[in-house]
Image 1 (spheres, rainbow, N blue to C red):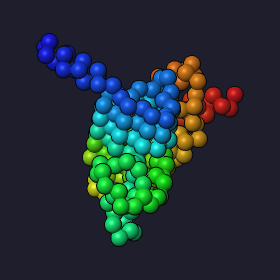
Image 2 (cartoon, rainbow, N blue to C red):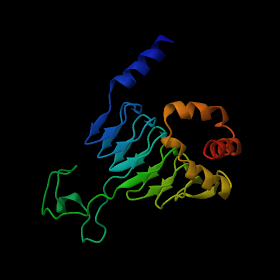
Image 3 (cartoon, one colour):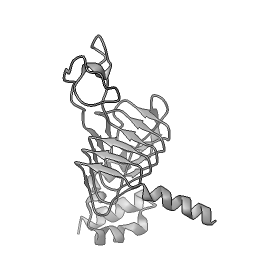
Image 4 (cartoon, rainbow, N blue to C red):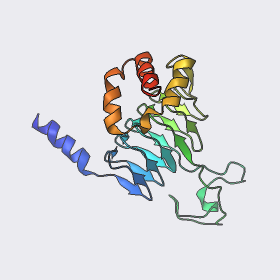
Length: 205
């Protein structure tokens, strides 16, 4: 038991690397993660050993361990794709030229998104609000709101709710509610229909 808690403490003591990024005070980045040029909305978290580059992440987002989002790509249209031909420091020392590569595209993650363990998300992709990315998935294309996708490449499994409920939830923008208001809605958070009814009644008074 003592060894378990000791190893858990060592895991947390590694810390995380955060550069040119904004993480809301209510959000958390676990140790071993690398976060660069990225923003996190409120009440979101990133698990251990993630790598997130140039990404806009909404509120209430849950990112499991080992997730990779964004990052650079090798220039496939060039004769040589090796970093010895483009600018910047890299894994190899030699430089035969320093051509500029295309800039890394921003990846956008909506609100209340759940990204499973070891998922890979290509740069420039947009993940819609309420979407679920299955563990180990490789996401190369945009994912619609409230869609569940999985696989390599990731494909649509199903939508979480009916289109009427999805439309209602997107219109409610509950993730923007003040905490006092959100606590009042929390009692019906398990029941989408009741949640939307309560929202409708509150906004027709």
